[in-house]
Image (cartoon, rainbow, N blue to C red; front, side, top):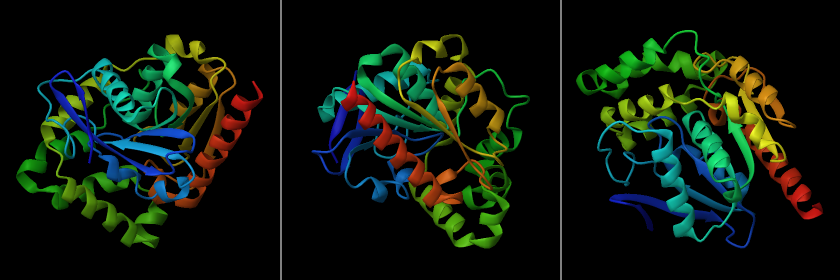
Length: 273
């Protein structure tokens, strides 16, 4: 796997799909790696897909302290530079969607369009996700498998947990293999806690934006997706009914179809401009 460098930070990335196609950069969420996109990537085979491990995850350098959105945006820029991608469609999920917002706001020349999935403009959580935070704190002691039952009801729809439990088990197995350090999770949560884009969302006018959200998301409720659409002129909201936070697992086909339609529309707009 090739690597990019941002100062002393080494970031591992790789390509999938067709290098001659439209470039799309995928940014994973909290504690996740490039592997979190495994359900979506096969649907993007005609695109030049760039994936990477966020700092502190996978094969990338460990975190050295608390992180900020600026840190993680700079990491994405370093990966794009290393991949030779001057500008791309950018898709971020959850925390990755927050990073994508700041990337588009601070480096608009690098972003052709945005897909913002299961994410927020910040500053709207009624209460901290105590269940998630407790599981993170206890994971080094109890292990991922014993803390997983605390987390799963927050991020997967009941129909997935009860109807297709093998999909949830696959995700748990992958997360266990990734073995992201709780130190990374805490460092990323620090950046999430300081994320705020509401006052600048109007600057994204003219950028094709699709906001994707599950109507059953307990971790980042649908009201956050609606706030993004209200703040971004021309943004489109797609609600995946019966889905919670992990959209690729709860509704793989609906999620992939939404991303593909966004890319088709964004490419058409770009060619017509």
